[in-house]
Image (cartoon, rainbow, N blue to C red):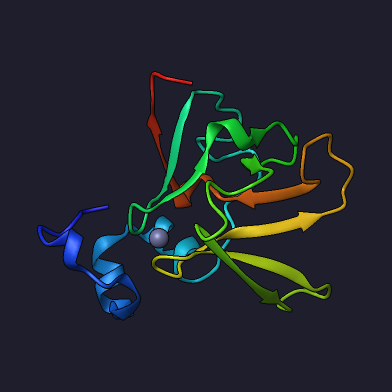
Length: 144
Ligand SMILES: [Zn+2]
C-alpha cells in the first residue's frame, strides 16, 4: 500500500471507500474492504515460519506474531491467538449457510479472515484465526 505522509494522524475508521481504493491495490481492497477470501494455498504467508510480527496491510497495526502461528494445513496462515486481546475484533458473519465469526482489525476495521474454535488442533487455545495473507505484512524480527 501507499502510506500517506500523515499516517500517524489518520483515523482509519473515518476513511471513505474511495480513499481505501486509492491506498490499496485491487486484490487487497477486495479482501480487506469487501470481505473477500484469497484462494487457499496461494497466499504468501501460508507456510512462512519466519520470526516476526504480522501487521495489518491496511493500517500497519500489529496484529499477530509468528510465535502464535501454527501449521493448520488449511490453505491460509493460521494463528491460535492474536498479538493482544484488543488487536482484533470479531463479529458474527452469516454470509454463508453456516454462522462464522469474522475477524477484523481493531484499528481500521478492515476484514482479515475468520476464527474457528474447537477443531482439535494441538494449540493452547483450540482457536484457529484463519487469516488471508494479503491482509498482512510480515515484519521479521531477530529476537525470539
Ligand atoms: Zn488495520
